[in-house]
Every structure is written in C-alpha cells, then in structure tokens.
Image (tube, rainbow, N blue to C red; front, side):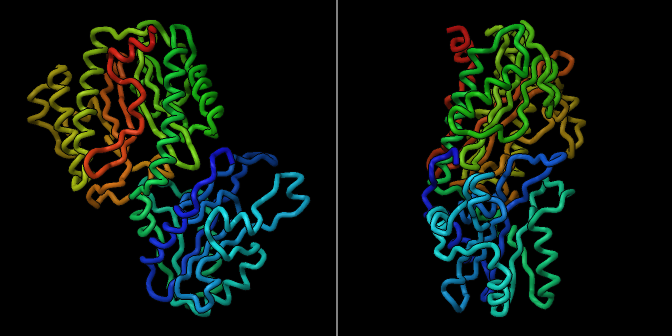
Length: 429
C-alpha cells in the first residue's frame, strides 16, 4: 500500500458500532468491489467498496466480510474471506493477504480462504433470523452497472429464499457520517498533500500555460506524497470555462488577465480531499475579479460559521442563499424586483449560484450521510459557494473541507491561500 498502516482499532470499533444496529440473530455480509474492465484485457485501477473498507480496512478485491454477533460459534461472529494466494499469483500480480495479514489489518481473528465461504455460510445461515445486505443508496448514485453486492444479493436470495432480508445502507449512512479521531487524521493527511499540490501549482501558473499542464503538476505532487490519484476528475477551468460547473476537458491555454478555477482533490488511504480555489493567471486580480471574489469569500466565511452542531443541511442551504442574495444585490447582478418576484423553488440568486454549498465528505468525495439529520460533532463537510457570470467570463468558487468540532471546527484545507492579498503575495514571491 502507498499509505501507512492504519490502526486496526478503527475497524474493530466500526464493526462494534455496526453490530449494535443489527436485529437479534441477524448477520450482515459485505462484498469487495469488482475490478472493472476497459477493453481487450484491460482493467481500471481497483477501488475498494467503501463500506467493506470502513468495517475491515481490507483493500483487496474478491474479499467478503461477515458480521454475525449472535453466532453460536465465537469464531463465526466476525469472519473475513480473502482469495488464497499462491506462487503463481505472487509472481504475476504480487502477493495477496495471508490469513495472518488479514487479521493484522482488520483485527478479525477468523480469516478464511474464499473457497471456504459457501460451506461456512450454509452453517451460519441455519442460525440466522435475518440477513443484512449492502447496497449503494447514495442519493446521487447512478446504478446502471451491476455490482458485486447486487449479484451476491440475487444469488443468496435464490439459495436461501426463506430468510428475512434487510438493508445495511441506512446504518452505514449514519455511522460513516461521524468521523473518528483516526479518520480525521487520515483526512487531514489527504488535505496536507492537496495543500502541497495547490501551493506547487500557484508557483507554476503563468500566461501561456495549458490547463492540462497544471493538471500534471497536481498529479505529480500527489503521487510523490503517497496519494495514488485524483479523487474525482479534476476541474481546471480558465476564463469563461469556469462558468461550466463540471468542465473537465482541461485543454485550454491560460490567458493573461483571466482567472483559473481549480477544483481538485486526492485520495489518501481511501479518504478524500476536495478543494476549490481561484487564482489569477498573471498573479494579480483585476478590480472586478477582486470585487466578485471577495463577495464569494464573504459568503464562504459566513457559511463556515453556520456549519455547527444542531443546524440542518436543508436549513443551512437556505441560510447560505440569503447570504448570497445580499452579495448579488450589492454586485448589481440581481435587483430587489428579481428577489420580490422570485420562485421559492428557484430563488433569484440561483441565476449566478446554482449548486449547493456543502456535502458530506470522507471515504467518498460525496460521502454518505443523512441529510434529514441535524449536524453533529464529527461530521465532515465541504463548504463551497460560488458566483458564475458567463457574460463577464468570471467563474469563482472557494471550497474547504471541514470537520465539525464541539467548540470550533477544524478546517483541514486552511493552508491553501484564499485571501486576495495572500494569493497575490505568494504567486509573486
């Protein structure tokens, strides 16, 4: 692994927390993700199922986790199944986890080879009153490709049709939304690497540079610090391209006088960073760019203060909308008549700020979490207001990653300059 070993106590505690939510006599099963094909014999890099990782720390394909707190045999209360390694696999692909290593990583004492799964499953299913199956129930998920969990769900229902089947997702969404101290350390490490990358790019940016050259600077800094890749397709949008919210071509030349919007994140130990900054190509903001930029920055600072225990995401977004409305009125982008006649379902500010301000972040960039719950200590959110003015070729978004604390929040990406003077001083130093 490119990351330092993680204390297995994290996964031991995560499993204990999950087990508390199971009904009496129930077991739960989690599968690793597939290795996805491209063409011919090509494959995409493996990305572990985040729920399996959260509960076991295992970062290997074809792994299965079974949690059965009420099993008669203590050895069956937590079980990890992994692919049996051999000399051929070790020669061609690299050695896989041994049983001993599986225990070391996960804290699970009962580690079996995958070939033993069906026989042991038959034993525990004879005792189980219910089975919790995993599924991707993220609000924005597009489920067009059948996952390993989906296939397994079909298989086990066909083989054991008389059992009661339940969903693990609601439990996982609740648990994963609260970050433990170990998780905060891992997310802070991801943010530390991302901070280095942003600082590197600030020094590299100048008129005539291609957007994809800037992308290359990010990935260079990520990989040299143990981060395997971008955590999402990077947005490096100069000039009017910054007004396209999901611009990912990154193929334009950065022109003197323009701003570049950088929305770039990375992984560390499967935990994500997600940051946006806007920098002037020539190292100096124009008067108008500074005016719009500072309006976004004021909204972001006020929004950060609203990310506190007891607030609620839907209400929070309404509050941010009110902050943005004032700024857009001051910028004369909207007027009082626009506000008076606005559609409550699409307020006037949405013309220039059409996306949400915050989302959960953690093992996924858009992490799981319950949007109906109130904010709690340990929640991790982004904070990313923006203003987009296509007719002026100005698109500005400022984004940080926040852990909600009891007395004050932790801004994990505060080391990346965002004050106008800080940006200009650093770029011109």
